[in-house]
Image 1 (spheres, rainbow, N blue to C red):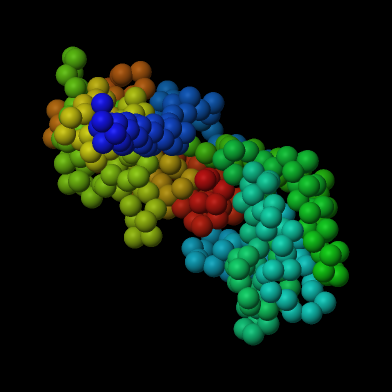
Image 2: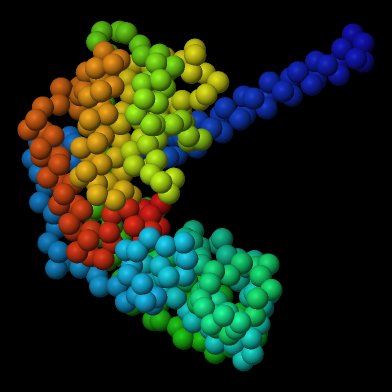
Length: 352
């Protein structure tokens, strides 16, 4: 075999490995996002025989002390206005003299060590406004607010991580001779645990299945065309999404066995069923979106000759849908009464 042939063979093998690796990576991301949807420990609203009574509001009501003047639920492009003591552990740093972001070098080096988002906001000397700070910023800041998010979908921050974050920020402050205002870590940890319990109680993912009769499979290209008629587009996560004007998903359509849909396999791929999903806390007006999702489900069922069933392959009736609608409405009310409006920027941070 000539050197040219060996080189061409090597290039071909590398290309095949790269394609395979990319496909595996996509499927890993997809399974990580959707694979546990039907294994969740909390009950699924659509599959319950009875409506679960929402937990008493007084038992988990946590009033947010909002640092920014704007309401917690307001949708805003400025992340600094979303910081609040309900969901963030915030250390305020007062500088001896206005300084750029480089003075926080120790923080930037360890920003991703805490398994929760860290947000840095600075009070700009020139404008007198709070703004998000990045490590490369040369703006001079008079004060910093350094915030560690206490809760997200992976749970509450651990006491050890919270203490580690506090010690890191205090060490940075000592190095630059800055004074600090620091919340009590034990109190913040207990609040995080309590708030996480509330978040878990309203973290509802509602799904509805569409399946063909017998052993017939549904062609992915037909699913794509039908979803497109309803404005749904195939996104990088391997699911079809109906997006709002901000690019946030209102509800999604996934392959029932969690293998992602991909543009280059739509013509050749087929599946035994699909599922429409509504991520209740991440959408505004979730009851309205549930009705919209069910309208799409019924249209898809008609166009693709499918049956709308629950997780036990039982056809969905009016009673079950009414119960689901009532439970979603209860979750929505509970979120609003606890200062977290569904679909708000605050909710998107918490349920990510």
